[in-house]
Length: 461
Image (cartoon, rainbow, N blue to C red):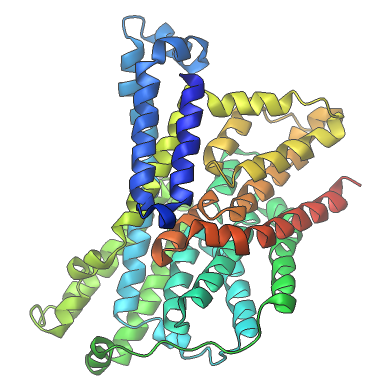
């Protein structure tokens, strides 16, 4: 059954990849995969769990419980808490972005971007995304930038390509900031890396990850101009009712609310989703007061209660399915087995950590990078200051931890469902998995190995 779980995951992953040929929504495939994996796990627990260290510890503390209690009441509850945080964060961020969009706040930005040249626009959006994702995080930044793309680009294929470059830029920008990516946040909070060193040591490799694909595209992508989308009749009507003050107010509140999330987490030490919900609640109350006299008119469409209907629910459910599936593999021990296999490679110690991190990065294109990094953090302790030899790689700010932040953060760009940013873009723009793999995966891989080479040259030699 242990092997069958891996087979079911691969089949589910294939169904997600072949969403368009199969004409089955990826959210449905992801949800089915997640539920089946947990069902197989609990039905075959008597053959899987005896080797689990977590189960042995649970039974030592709760001798009267069973494996069913361990899975149904302990493991699922634990993972549901982690998954829920991501889903509520995503839901809050998407609602804030929709509120800004409904009040035409993004129009103030898109009006400033005059160029329609494909290459020039790609560079502008990618660089902007790279630095935004370091200040916000790669998921939130992707949601904001994809919403902007809808206002800038009319043709779907062009919008898909720009959205894909936004994913590459967001993941690259998130890797060098302590608050830019979930995995970097984990390493930062865990004490493996510090703020200044992760920025100084990983900035150049992350920049190379973005610049190399941009240079390749600049030479080989068809030149020309992009068409701006025409305003719909509904948008033309709304232009007359929304004032410049309201556009500016919602844009400022939206951006400030998103930027406030890492500040809230730093000050309170509470999960980021609570900061996101706090920002949403402030915007909600403000807009209720702003439009309280227009509950039945055109402005009623600007209330959060109406805007919530526009939020892409299938994307949220897709996240739920993917994370449910991955946590089943994590709980059953598949990812731990993978980590131990990597550690057992017959490679010289001074090279092994680079190979392990590179492979983790490549795997993060298939499996969520959060449990992979969590597995690595569980396998290796932080070495004491002054350690020498192989142990030195695992000190605070050691090369293993820094390179892990880079590879896990950027490797997910190789496949569109390998990162939260990619999944969000895929859901919002309905990007085809096969299309991304044909046109973007090699670009992302070139950037990934270029950045890895930069880091290796900076430290290993």
